[in-house]
Image (cartoon, rainbow, N blue to C red; front, side, top):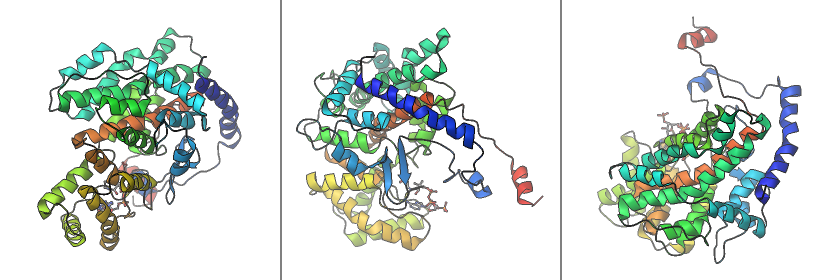
Length: 436
Ligand code: CMX
C-alpha cells in the first residue's frame, strides 16, 4: 500500500468491523422502526431501513458529513492555493475515513486522482458516436458503464481467490480510478455537444476542481464554483434515489462502474437531480412569460400561484426529508451574494426565496416549503457561462458519485449483504388491514 488514505481507511475498517458484528450478533432482534401500510405504499418515506456512516440528514439541520455540518466541512478541509473552497479530494478523504486530512495527506490524494485521469480511447469513441441531440446524462451514464471492463474488483473476484474481507480493497481502487475520470468524461461531453472544439487534456498540476475549470475553459473563480458544487452535492445519506440505487446495485457485487451508472439514471429524474435543470428552465420561462428581465416580487408571486393552480410543482422547493432551508442552498447563496449579487437572474432567485415558502405554506400541500439545493445551483453555472442547463445534472452526478463510491467501499468493508426486501400484494395488505 502506498497511499496514506488507503492505509488510514484500512485501519478505520479494522476498528469498525466489531461494532457491526456485535449489533447483528447480539442485538439483531431489536426493533428499529414500524412498517405501516402508508409507508409500504408511500415509497418507504422515512422508514429506517438502511445504514450509512458517510453522512446523515437531519430534517432541521440538513446534511452532516461524518457528523460535521457543511460549514464545518468547508472550514475544516485544506484549501487549494488562492481558493475560498477546499480540495474535493480532501472531502473524499473525510467521507472515507471520518478524519480531516492534513495538507500533505490531501496532496497525496490529489496525486492519486491526477494519475488516473486519462480516459480509455474507447470511452471517447463511444461518446463521439452519440447523436448531438442525446441528453448528456445518457452519455455520462453510458460512458461510465462502458468502463466496467476496467474493474479491478471483477478481475480479482472472478479469479476466484478474493476473500470477502478484502472486497473493499479492489473496490477502493475502482472507485479512485472512476472518480478521477468523471470531470474528464463530463467536459468531453460538454465539448462535443456544445463547444464543438478539440477537447483539452488535463493539467496534471491542478486538483479536481481546478482541472475541471481548466477543461471547461473557465477562469477563476469557476474553480471554486466547481469545488463547491462537487462538495455540496456529494452525499445526502442513503435513502435518496441515487444513493439507494448505487447501494442496491452494488449489493449484488456489480462493480463500481455499473453501480455508478445505475445511480446516475435515478439522479436523472425530474423529482431528483434533474431539478436544477428544471429550475433554470422554469426561471427563464417565468422571465419570458412575465415579459420583464427583472420581475417584481408581485409578478413572481402571481407566476408561482398560476403554476400551483394548474397543478404543477415549483422546482427547487420541497424535500422528502428536510423541513428547513437546505444548508446546501445557504452555502451557495452566500457564495452568490459575495461573487455575483448583481446578476439579474440571481436577483430573481433571491426574490423567489422570499416569496415561494410563504406561497407554499398558504397553498398547504408541501410538507416543506423551503428551498432545496437545486433552487440555487443552476443559476451559478448560468452566471459563469455554463448555460446549457441539460448539463447541470451531469455536474450533480460527478459529485454524487463521490459519496456513493465512499458508501460502496464501506458496504463491502462491513460485508453488507445483497439487498432483498419483501413485496406484498394489494390483497395481502387488505387482509393485514382487516378489510378482507
Ligand atoms: N411545489 C408544489 N407542490 C409541492 C412541492 C413543490 N415544490 N413539493 C411538494 N409538493 C406537493 C407534492 O406534490 C404533494 O402533492 P400531492 O399530495 O398532490 O401528491 C404534496 O405537496 C406532499 O408532498 P411532500 O410530502 O411535501 O413531498 P414529497 O416527499 O412527496 O416529494 C419532492 C419531495 C422533492 C419530490 C417535492 O417536494 C417536489 O416535487 N419538489 C419539486 C422538485 C424538486 O425540487 N426536486 C429536487 C429535490 C432535491 C433532490 O433530491 O435533488
